[in-house]
Length: 257
Image 1 (cartoon, rainbow, N blue to C red):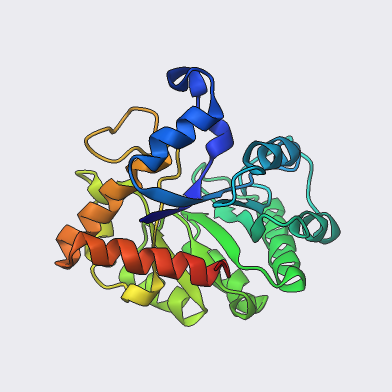
Image 2 (cartoon, rainbow, N blue to C red; image 1 turned 180 degrees about the vertical axis):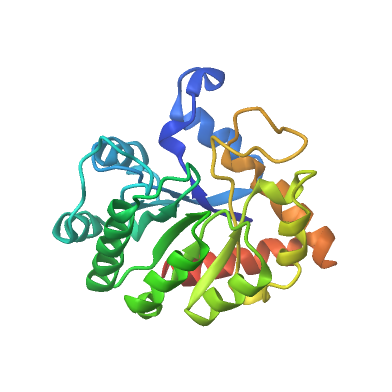
């Protein structure tokens, strides 16, 4: 059994599944993916996302506004805490920092990040963190705002083992995506060898980041097994063990039975 700890089910094109969400889920099930976390990216789409997954007992979600989304409603702590009261919400985010465009003025991102951390602490839920080109600011903001009180998942982590160690010390899990299968993903493979098995998660980030041999095609949670297979190879562990302990880790982090 696999747990896809980070996907966007509501953004997958259903054209290949007869425009049927249930058919998509049946396809995913054949790959032995039994639990998924559907990630919130803005306030405007939350209700539709929640309605999409509400009938399925093993699909959960988060509430948040993606760090680099502009021209969307800006969240406040109260709004996020209200969304967190919904039964299926098990995390706050996707939040964090994304400096990939090289802009010098990222105060708005930093403030949004702090709002999410405060909402997570008030809701007593873990955080889903996105970080790109913002290593030190991410670490500083997490530490300064006592994010270790709730911890969370470092989504699609591509930094080095040194940063991973600091995050693990702050009560975070490290989530590995299909990038671990890419030709240029050697740094991720080297880092992923070092992660303690009780702090490792797997994800697809579907519909993006399809692992090899599907790179460039739309992704779906069924392909999380390819992430697990690559981790089993590089960590010299049986696939069944990787599947079991990443499943257990996700359930522990999100406080699921």
